[in-house]
Structures are given as structure tokens and as C-alpha cells.
Image 1: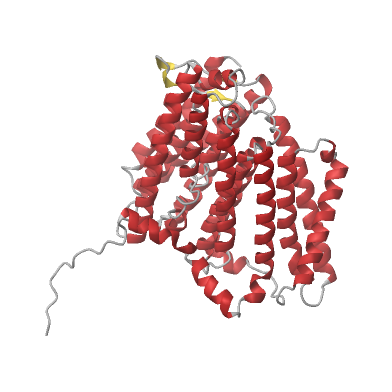
Image 2 (image 1 turned 90 degrees about the horizontal axis):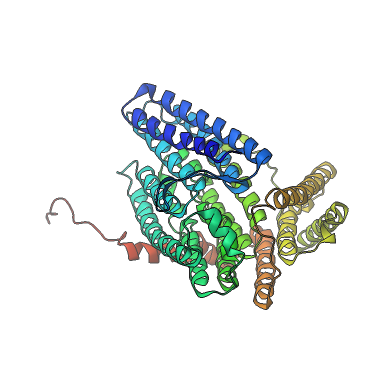
Length: 521
């Protein structure tokens, strides 16, 4: 592909910025400019993906000087993210047509959506460090305006304040990482940095600092423990914003780690720490999710858990699998938030008896058998990789949770067969998509590294921890009437009070003075 053609991708964020200016001044007709801009962005994303698949990765000429300006990097990573952001953008803008109908600030809301989408597209398409850092900060600042769209909602202001602090810390870390990478690799061009990372010896001091700062920036961006508290509290924002979060915003931390995978592999210590934090966040989110009493609250904690799992995958060096997880989760969760209002009408799950330990054990054995059979038939076990097998073990535990309800009470043959077929389809799809992701990104992402001793310990800890949490998720309904579980449930429902600490840190619990003195009779 001629490099100059890649520059045309900048028309997508440019059209969205123009639409944001027009929509902000309009009321009823605000949807028109926003819809046209998002559709144009989706068409450009499709064209970029087709051209890149046929002609290979390319970086456009720099529109600037001294390594600072606008440039576009088109490869498997950026094209995947570009398509994701454009597709979700089209859906969210169209959804907002009815959601914000009658609101006098509908034009302002749609303008904010377009600005945020433009910033995210500039981020995922960035071909140089200056653009990436600027777009990273712009994405966060644009989102802040959407989080406090209804400023009268105090809970929304508190969540936005915590998000703002975490984001600024992430910005500082990313700036430090960019400076370290320029010093280590002598260029601001991302493609050049990744190419030169292959020739730099592991544990080089500057590269180690760059990897560590990239890791911290990613953890801050993707709501990882202990900076996760704001995410479950943004439910006071309009529902389209919750869906928009999954269009390269909350998962931008994962994108950052995947984009600079070659740099991250220069510091295995940083990867191990990222894996530990991500794994713990995934476990915390998965357990707290069980105690939530609202649909959007459970979805928010599920996002915390999934972002932790994505970070764990990056920490294990399985960057291609992490990219696949990022895309699949974004589409699923954006749909889940947009359809959360109709969950009661669409829910048809049968009420079953309380789960037993025997049903959990049977489900685990069946899930393992399905996984081994699918892996052997697909040939995946012919090239065993520790990271892939670790993630596969976690998949087995998740599949067992899917199977467990069908064995509770009096078994229903049709339900058991349907559930077994569904589990088989999921497992086969896992191997097929994993293989496809690794092959499609082979020219862009490094292979999964062979784990060192510390890495093997991290993998073992991840498997043991997820096994314990899976057992807890299976048996929690059976324990719900026990006094000990009732007490634990209260603490878990409040996220083990990490948010209380964060609220005090940002002054969110500071009481304001009454507007008028209270008279005493």
C-alpha cells in the first residue's frame, strides 16, 4: 500500500470533529451530522482493513516536523481497533437518537460522543509517540465531559473525579515511557521503535523503565486495582456512555500493552507484575459481581473482571489472544449495556435448585474432557505453550460454571444436551479464534515467550486462584442463607471498601456547608 493512502484514515477523526462542532449547536437535527460522520468512519475502517490485509502494514508520512505531528500506522492491531471503534460508534450514536430524544442538550451530548470517538481513533491509528500521547490524554478529557454530563448528579461527579486523578497519573507515566523510548530507540516513530526493540538486549535499563511506565499507564487506564473504583460508579451517566467506554477507552490500557508488545518483552519483571495485578483485579471483580443487585452494577463489575483478565493475558505474553479478548468483550459488553433496560423481559432462565458440590465436580470433569478433545482434534496440543494452556485451564473453569446449572435438581435431558452442545461450541470456537488471532497478527506481534521461573509461578498462582473463585461462584447460592456468607456478602457488595479509601483520598466524602443556618426551636 502506498504510504500516502494511509493518511486518508485521518478523514475519520476529522469528520467526527467537524460533526461534534455542528451537533453541539443543533437540537433536534443533531443526529444527522453525527450519523454521517460515524458511517464515513466505518467505511474508512473497512477500507483500511481490506487494504492492509492485501498489501501489508504501512506507516503514512508524518504531517509535522521533528517527529511531532500526525501519522497513521496501519497493521493488524490498529485496523482491528479502528473497526471496533467505528462500529460501536455507529451503534451508540444511533441508539442515542431515541435515548436522548426530548432532551434539550441532545446536540451537546452527540457532539461529546463524536469528540470522544475522534480522540480514540487518533489514539489507535497513531504512528508516532507524540500523537499517541496527545490522543491518550484527549480521550480521557473527552470522556470526563461525558461522565459529568448531568452535573447535578453527585455520584457521577465523584466517579469522574476519581477517574480524572487516575487518568492524570496514567498520562504522566505514558509521557515518561515515551521519553524513555525516544532515548532508548532514538525515534518517535512507533514502527521504528518496535523494529529496534528486537535488537536491544533484554533488561536494558532505559527499556526496563519504559516497560514499567507503560505497564503503570495501562493499569491506570483500564481500571485495575486499586484504581478500579470509579468504573462501577459511572452508572449515573447516560447509558450510551457506558457502551462507549468499551470502544477503545476502558480497554485502551490493553491496546497500549499490545501495541508495544516488543518493548514489554524486554522486561519480564514488568510483565509478571502486570499479570499479578490483572489476575487479582479479575478475581476481585468476579467475586464482587456475584453480590450486585442491579443489572448495570453487575455489568460494571464484570467489566472490571474482564479488563483484569485481559491484563493477565498481556502479562503472560499472549498479546494476540489479549487482542482477541479485547475485541470480543467490547462487542459483547457494549450490547449488554445498551440492552440492559430490557433484561427483565428477555430473561427466560429457569429457576433451579441450589447447586451441589457433586454437580460442580461433574461439570468440571466434563468441561475438561471437552477441552482436551477439542484441543487434540484441532492440533493445538501439538505445539503446547504454557501461557495458552494456562488460559485454557481458566476457560475450563468458566465452561464448568456454564454446565453446572444443568445438573442441579432433577436432570432435564434436553437442557443437559443443549448445555453440552453449547459448551462444545464455545470450546471449539476458542481454539479456532485463538489460532486465527495468532496467525493474523504473526507479522505484527511477537510470539508468546517461554516463561521463566517467576512466570511459571505466576501461571500456577493464576490457575489456583481462578479455581478457588470458580468453586466459590458455584457454591455461593447454596451458602446464601448462612450467617457467615451474609456477613461476607455485605463486605463484597461494597468492593471490600476500597472505594471508601479512594473517596476519602479525593475528598468525595467532604460534607458541604448548609446553604442556610438551621434554627433551633
